[in-house]
Length: 424
Ligand SMILES: [Zn+2]
Image 1 (cartoon, rainbow, N blue to C red):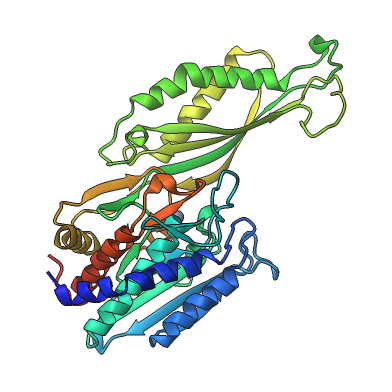
Image 2 (image 1 turned 90 degrees about the horizontal axis):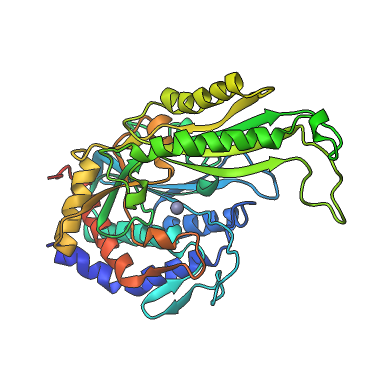
């Protein structure tokens, strides 16, 4: 047990809370991407005081980047006494909109019953605060450490990370030899190590028809009915097949341990924003967006062909049926090996701090690890941080103060092991 390091972190409990509150008070809502710059400046100012070198990187030309809403990222680096590996803590600073149902001000950082409440408390400003205090405590106790520590606050994770980690990874900021190990303090809980995520395929399917007067639909061809046939075929053939697929990926929650598909949206015919009465028309177009999540055992080509085979089948069977399909997003599934240094270091940290075996999990949805793996080609990366994933994006989101303190200890001892190359 590293009592010295742990005592310093215990002493900074209030500091972790204060930092979390300060971060929550920046309403970094995405979209549109509000308050990114002041939040990044706040993080930079804090770390500069501790001797970090800080750089702002604007994701210029990425989705949503304007002078009103610049995609401002911050990266801070502190080089140790001697050369060695670099450990990077990456947190996204953006949050989703507060929406309805809150009983406290979502951007006040209310402290109550051992918890900090606020939008982004668990996803993931509490995790960011824990990682910053962990790094600072480690630097104070072991000032002669080898290697380097990096901390970044990045934007747009909630909308795909293109102006944040993806942009920075394309500039080589998440690649060797600059960086060796990455910990993303997403709220997977203090005793769980998240090794990666399922794959994603988003696509838009359109069916076509022919306009006619609604009183004589037989003169036209209803695109919505064609889409209805697509939905029926999905219900009869695709959903049962997806539910049968199993995986060696330890996805949580259990329901996500098979393949899933969400019908994200469907639109056909007259839009519903008219006032008065609708006009009688046979719709000539219907669009549906599908959100398919897939497993390490599945290939993206197969995932796509399961859908197109159904559409082609309808084309043969159903008079006048035709369709178009367009890819919107593709992300391959990811699973970091359990014997990678960052995994074994954090696992040992969990054992040391909490005296329990870590649980290894896979996230049902993706997060910025995808860009670090695919663009940065860096695979020694996990998500590890305090907070309960189920609370993310919901009203009265909170983070437990004890959980932040404990996970800060885990991050600090993991940092020590990785920098000193003393990974078990
Ligand atoms: Zn998050």
